[in-house]
Amino acid sequence: MSVDETDGGSWSTRIGFILAAVGSAIGLGNIWRFPYQVHANGGGAFLIPYFAALLLAGIPVLLVEVWLGSETGLTTPLAIREKFKESEFLGWWAVLNGFIVNAYYVVILGWSAAFIVFALTHGSTLPTGDLFTAFKAFLTSWYPVAGVIVVWAINYVILRLGIEDGLERANKLFVPFIWVLVILLAVRGMLLPSGLDGLEFYLTPDFEALTDPSIWISAFGQIYFTLSVALGIMITYASYQPEDQDITNNAFIIAFANCGFAFLAGFAIFPYLLAADATATDSIGLAFVVLPKAFQTIPFTPIVGAVFFLLLTLAGLSSSLSLAEAQVGPLRQKLGLSRAKTVNAVALAGVTLSLVIALEGPLGLLGSGEAVGDSLQLLSMFDTSSATYTLPMIALGETLIFGWVYGVGAFDGGQRIAEAANAVSDFSIPPRLYAVVLQIVVPTALGYTILSQIVVDGK
Ligand code: PFF
Ligand code: NA
Image (cartoon, rainbow, N blue to C red; front, side, top):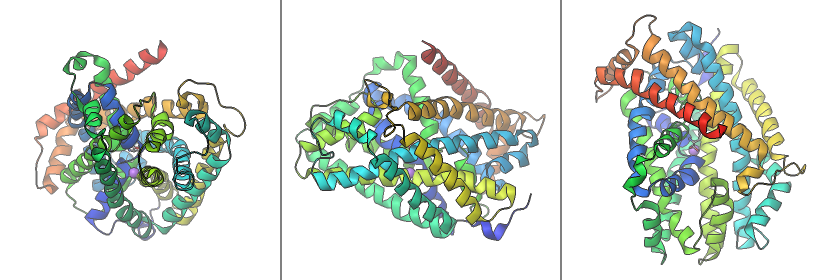
C-alpha cells in the first residue's frame, strides 16, 4: 500500500470536519422523508421510536465509524483491515454501495436543480396544468439528463479542489446556508393561515401507533441512511481529521444537528401542504408534485418554490460530495493514485451510471405506476437494493466485527472502543453499557429490520 500523505489532504479545523459530516448527513432524507414518516407513523409519538433508534442503533455505529477513521487515519476498507484483516471486503462493499446510492441521488438532485429554474421562470413549478402529468412529462424530457450533467460537473470541480479547498469550503458555505433556508421556509409556513393546522397534522401524537412493530422498523430503517453511516463516508471523513479529536463529542454533535434539521423540516413542509389541502403518497411525489401545487396557492409562489428547491439541491449536493469522496479516498489510498486521477475515474463512472438512470425517461422505458416513484424502475431498484437491503447488512457486519471479534478472540470490542473514545473526549460513555449496546442491541435491531423487510417485500 502506498499512501501519499501530502496528496491526501485533511480538514483544516475541527469545525471543517463537523460541518462536512453534518453536510453529508443532512440531505434529501431529512427534508422529504423524515417529516412525512412522522406524520404517517403516529405524529409526535413517532419521535419516541426515532430517538430510541438514534440512541440505541444510530449513534453507536456512528461512534464506531468516527473512532475507526480517527484512530487509523485510513479510509474505509483500509481502516477496517487495520483492525481486522479478513474484513477489508466489507469496506469495499460499502464503497460500492455508496457509488450506487450516489448515482441515483445525483439524478434526483438534477431534477431539483431544474426545478429551481422552473420555479423562477414559470411562477409555478412546471409549465403546464396538472402537476402529476407535468412531472411525468418532465421525466421523459431531456431535462433530467441535463440535470445529471450539471450536478456531476459541480461535484467534479469541488472534488478536484481537494479536502480543504474543495469539500471543506463547499460545506462551510452550504451547511449554514441550508439552515437559513429551512428556517425561512418554516417561519413563512407557520405564518400562513394553515400554520397551526400543519403543526397539528405533523405532530399530534397517536400513542396507540407505537404498539405497531412496523413503526419501530421504520424508525430503525431511517436512522442509518440519515446519519450517512454504513456507506463508508464517516470513516473516510473522520480519517481526514487532525489527530486526537474528541470522538464522542463530534459523533453526538453530528447526530443531533442532523436530527434537529429533520425535525425543523417538518415545519417547513406541512403548513404548505395543509394550505393546499394536499397529501402525498411517496417522497418523490411530495417534493416534485404536491409541494409545487401547494406553493401555487400562496403569495410569492416563484420565490417560495425557488427557496425550497435551492434548499433541497444544496442539502443534497453536500451529501452527494461525501458519497463520491467515499470512493475517491479509498481508491486513491489503495492504488496510490493522485487525487486528480482518482476523481476523474470516479466521476466518469458515476456520471455514466447516473445517465443510464436518467435516460429511462427519454428512452420511453418508464413503468406505469400509481405513485410517481413507482414508474422510475431503475431508480427504485437501485434505491431498494442499496438503501433498504445492503445498507443495514453492512451496518450489521460492522457491528459484529467491532462488537465481537475486533481484537480477535477478545469479546470486548465495544468496551475497547468506548475506552479509546473516552481517552480523547471530554465526556465519557460507560464502556460496559456501550459494549452491550454494540454487541446485543444493535445487531438485534438490524437483524430484525432486515428480516422484516424481506417479509414485507415477499408479500
Ligand atoms: N444522509 C443523506 C440523506 O439523508 O439524504 C443521504 C446520504 C448521504 C445517505 C450519504 C447515505 C450516505 F452515505
Ligand atoms: Na447534505
